Image 1 (cartoon, rainbow, N blue to C red):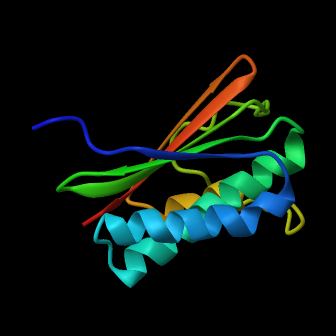
Image 2 (image 1 turned 30 degrees about the horizontal axis):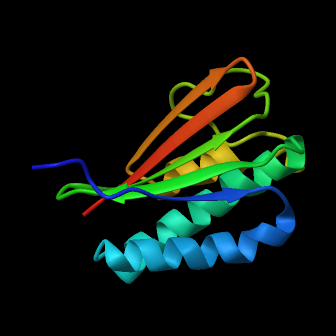
Length: 128
C-alpha cells in the first residue's frame, strides 16, 4: 500500500477561514467521512487556525489525509506557544482565556502537538 493522498492549503489571514472550511469539507468528503467526523474536524481545525491567526501574522499550512483507521488534519504554523501543549488540557479557569486546545481535544480522538522554535505542528485525528 502506498502513501495516503495528502491535500494541502496555506492560510495567512482571517479572510482565509471560509475557504479553509470549504477545503476541509471537500477533503473529508473525498475521504468518505461521516457528517459527524467532518464536523468535528472542521470545528477543531477552525479553533487551531483561529488561534494561529490571533497570535502570528505568518499564517500556516493545513494538510489532510486519511487511511482505513482515521482521517487526519495537520496544522503547521510559525507562531510561538507559551508552553508545549503535552497531554490532556484542562479547561482554563479564566472564562476569558482561550479554550481552543481544550475544545480540540474534546472533538478529536487523537491530538499530538509539537512546539519548536518558530514552528508548531498540531496533528488531529478522528477515528473511522
